[in-house]
Every structure is written in structure tokens, then in C-alpha cells.
Image (cartoon, rainbow, N blue to C red; front, side, top):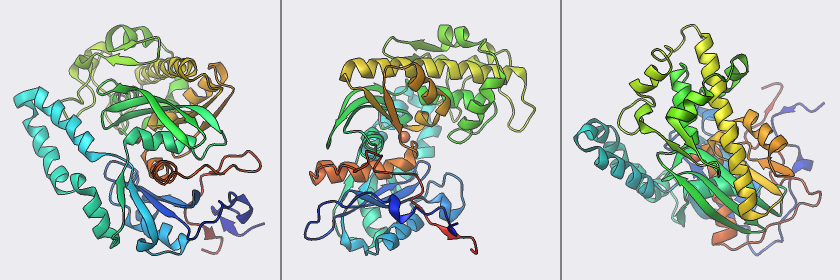
Length: 396
Ligand SMILES: [Fe+2]
């Protein structure tokens, strides 16, 4: 048996792209929200992709991914100035615009929030290109993506499909919370979007917090709790908190949520609706939390199924690609595959923001440098698998 654990086998490498004069390296970056990561493409093939947490050992590390970048450059055996472009996965100016509008609309009650967010934005997030150039000692091209395009690209380009419908379902990225798009060869178009504050991901995170788990981290625990409960609150959620439309879009009744003007995802109204305060972190899990987990899971699955049917109607495609934080809900994904209208699905393994680094790099390769997609000879996904980070021998 191989003594290398976690490293891709040489035979698993995708085929070579037609050789140009000089290989084109593109570095994708995700940072400053959660799950910072770096990904390196060489002529449209993945060389390396890894989250910063693998090096820093800080779970969901949001800091600039210095170690992840270094690993990618070492794997590629290149220097920063060999890169044709560095691309950041999100557009901070648009995100800032959303936060600015939200705080303005809240008037005086938002003062605390201003002080919470302004220093970081003015200091770092609004100056990504300068920051990248400085951190990498790099003089070349720095581009910025939009959040959902990064997710969509991460779902479609490394997939085995020549054409497919694409759904991104997320908490929020800039203004958008979910998008429907279509990929055809090297083209990728986002067709429709749902906008903040109406978000399936933020709904799920609100329940994650209420049931006593950590937001942007413990969602998988609540998903795992769901099968222990009964869906007894589904009607209550759909009557009071969420208006679910035929196309899968939702409208949240903001009286039940706190994320517009408080540090909390939920409001006191939610505690009234569910007969008592949120569960304290680490306290005993009761039947109520199990039933709440099951109920919001059912609502999420129903919304995703409707989104999938809508995407099918809009695109006419027979295959579906998925990414965005909500696409980490594998239980819901299974239902979309079994009960939805698509014959096949491919889900970006790094469906959260780390995968945005990879998607952003792919999008720049195909849509900035106008490069065609390279077909894999066996029809398998170009990404092959998700272990594109460091490998270790048994001895290590
Ligand atoms: Fe995201």
C-alpha cells in the first residue's frame, strides 16, 4: 500500500491543456470572512488548493491565507511574479455597499454596528489589491470576482459536465443569497438572484444559533440532529417566519431575525414562537431542539427542491451543479437528486467560501483569459477529488 496519505495519486491528474508558450498560472484567494483558502491553476488544471486552517490549526480561519498561498506556489514550483493573475473571490465594495445601506436604514440603532465593522473595512477589506500585492510581494494583475460567480464557477468548471444548470445557495455574498445560472462549455451566466436579507443560509444559521450551535460552523451538527426530531414546527415556520414561493425563493419576516441590527441571528420573537429562550451552548439538547432541527431541515429541502425545478425550467438542462454554503447540506442534496428534475448532479466539495478561491481562478482562466475548457478523456470531473492540499507519509 502507498505510504502517502491524503495526497492525490499521479494517475488522478487531469489531462494536460494544449501547451502555449509559457504556462498560465492563476492564484485564487478566499479571505476575511470564513474559511480562507488559496487555489492555483496551471493552464486551467488544478495544481493545489487548500484552506488556511490546515496550516494554522485555527478552525475556519478567516485571516489572509499566507501559508495556503505559500503551499500553492511551492506545489507549482513558481514565484509570485510568475502568476498571470491573482483573483480574490468576492467584491468587498459591493458587500460594503450592502452593509452601508443596511446600517443607514436602521438609523441611530445601528451606531454600535458601525463601530464594530468600520475599522476593519477601512483598514483592510476595501483595499484587497494593495493588500495582495504587499503580502505576496507581487506586481502583476489582481482581479476581484463576485461572490456567487466564484461559487458558480467552482461548481461548474471542475465538474464532469459540458453543460449544466447551476445553483448557488448561500448565507449571503455581496447582495445575493442564492443564484440560478447556466454553464455551457467555457461560458457561465448567472440568470437570476435572490437578495439579502432573504436567505436560506441565514435562515438555517438562525436555527443553528437558536438550537445552541455555533453559526457558520455548527450547521452540520443541527443537520445531524434533524433525524432525531419530528417536523412539527414546519407549519409554524412557514406561517410566521418564512414565505416560500413556487420558484424556491423565500421572504423572511425580519421580526423573527436579529441579523439586520444586532449581533444575534435571532430575535425575541423567535423565542416566543418556539416557547422559550434559545438553548444555551453546551447545555442539554431537548426534544424541542430536535424538532426545530428537523423542521427547518424540511423547509430547506422543500426550498431547494423548488429552486431545482425552477432552474430546470429556466435552463432546460438535464444536469445540475451546486455550490454555496447551503450545498454542504448533503441530506438536502440527496433529496434534490432523488426527487428533483435533474438526471445528474455534481456538487463542489468545498461548497463553502474556501471553494470560492478555486471558482474565482477558474472564472478568470475561462472568462478573462478566454481559454476553452479541456475535456477529461474519461468523462470524470476535472477536479477528481478534494485532496489538493499537503500530503503526509505514515512516518510523518
Ligand atoms: Fe459563500
